[in-house]
Length: 183
Image 1 (spheres, helix red, strand yellow):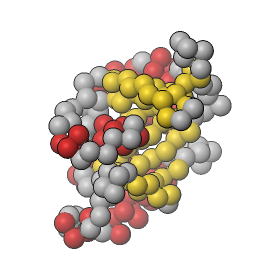
Image 2 (tube, rainbow, N blue to C red; image 1 turned 180 degrees about the vertical axis):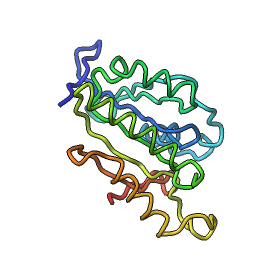
Image 3 (cartoon, rainbow, N blue to C red; image 1 turned 60 degrees about the horizontal axis):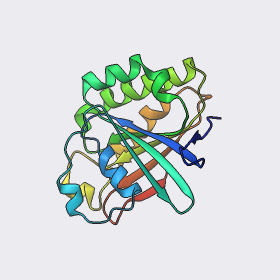
């Protein structure tokens, strides 16, 4: 199991990586995790360039969350230097934009590369897959999404992941102040 990183103040800090393609909603999830509830904060989000590290404390826990920009040039660099980025990580949140039907294969391919590197470097982390932008009334507003498409994506995820790899899949949305349902 990955160890907690030590903070300057002597307290332990949990390092969490948020990864996925560009425009998948990683920064929005980070804002929700920080407890930001003002929806206007979500309107001014700009693409993350490189890795943005945000540190904060909730109750008695310290967090360093690394928000990885998802543009292709950044993804290549993360994969090439993966062992450096993964050091001290307890959890990876891999985000797939459920509304970006055209890029499911690309998102799954990147996820497979991340999982392969975790196994290659023998790193055990809590790995969660967020099917993000699973917004209320989604099927009414996006005709490309329906329950069959979601089941197909979940099956593709399960086929992409090695049998001995532990993970969980969640439907997420920033609406109703971030909601997560285990699948």
